[in-house]
Length: 249
Ligand SMILES: [Zn+2]
Ligand SMILES: [Zn+2]
Image (cartoon, rainbow, N blue to C red; front, side):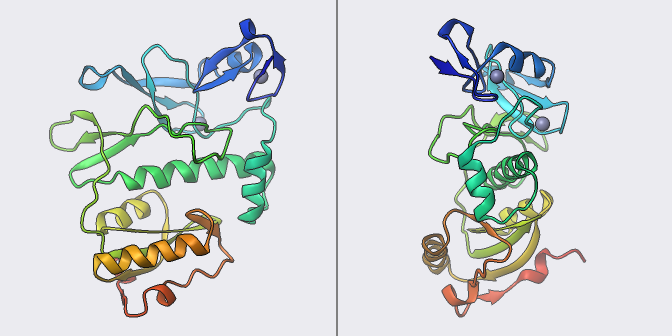
């Protein structure tokens, strides 16, 4: 027996439809049948489509001929996932289970999109295996992250660019903090996604890597509760405070 990932109804194999990498039952499938609107069909002849959620506006990449649904939105048949609820508890979110799940999924997507920032490109959509249901970060299958060239309008699969990342940053996304290392463009991409810069320190790249790794060991994951003291100066004592560059002028 399999079970529907959205409502946990037990199903025989023939009653299961694969949607967004997961098994869904017929009633759950019907609820989201019209949810995703096609916005880019087979960019560059790749066997991929970019679809946008008509409920919340988040876009997702999907293999051609696959069924998918929004990375963020749950529905009235969804039931809470204990792993996601544990995450919400750790992050002290305090909303309903569904609000917390959707907030975590939306923030996970924004963090992913910001990582693909590249000058001259607009990042359009990604695909995070397991969303909107689970918080399992070790699931790595994906139809890729896609962006549009600002000059030519061409839509292509993006690779992560590891430029000269000389910044260690702490930003706030609503009720959570996120830290990382990156270029000015990366921090700017977080701000464009709605993040508020808390502290941004500049230092030589090798030192920023060591400092970020120390933060990663101290705090589980890249998202932490907004009450968690994340001390960038402790891990990067002579970092130069450049937060001003990212504040609205
Ligand atoms: Zn179901
Ligand atoms: Zn949605």
